[in-house]
Length: 359
Image (spheres, rainbow, N blue to C red):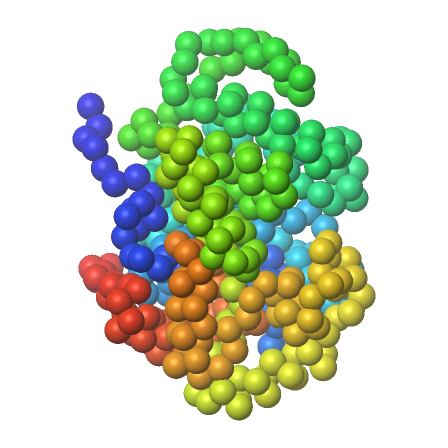
């Protein structure tokens, strides 16, 4: 019998402020700019980044699930590694960091997904997690010959999908499923997830329907930069339902030796915005241009190491448990973040130094 182990280490308990890296599996990452410094998402770059983050004590790598780019001059995300296969590769090459897969419910059958994710979880010995998304890009749906169900119905479909996966992972005997979206016969699946315990599931639903889905089913909920009252309400409602939920948010980072240097680079990025690509990003139109260029409308921490650390601490003070970070060029910029910003967060009492064995 397999002995008990720490499921998704570092994400359950661990640091007061948890950190992940977001979107490194896709070309240009989370930025929409035409500069030579933008992210080149080769496998070699992803592997080096994951191993660097692993040694630095970063808790997670979270990918974007994209099947088409956003067009424009640079076609951001036009090249992307399929996220479950990507997770398998990174889990095999790291020792501590959790690696997520981002799975589109309408595009991946639940029986196939359950098998793929259990495989990844065994490769990582319990360090795999799933980011469950309903999808929104109808062009991508057309590639698979399926129709978009609409916003609210998409979450109903996701609930059926997740219930099928969880029954497989619970080790149920062969079963049938008769739902509105799935009619399946003689379902079974082995192996179960590593250690017989399901991986953590995150979801980014921010509408009321999406939040309700996350409150009932997710372990981790992604939200935009909102008031502390909204985040506190999410946690209160989960507690009333007998559940514990973490709330995370994406944050863009430009860290340089001086704030003026960081701002100069941010201005340089804005000057070289790929406006056509930005126009293809849902929900980006009402945000300031710098935020749209550098992070699809999310908060950006721009400055020297002190200012970046202070910015992350301010976001944490709004009751966020964790942040997924993205950089213009992850591999060039993350080492400075690890060397300069992480120690400042440790001195603030938000994180503990990473203790890593030599491999």
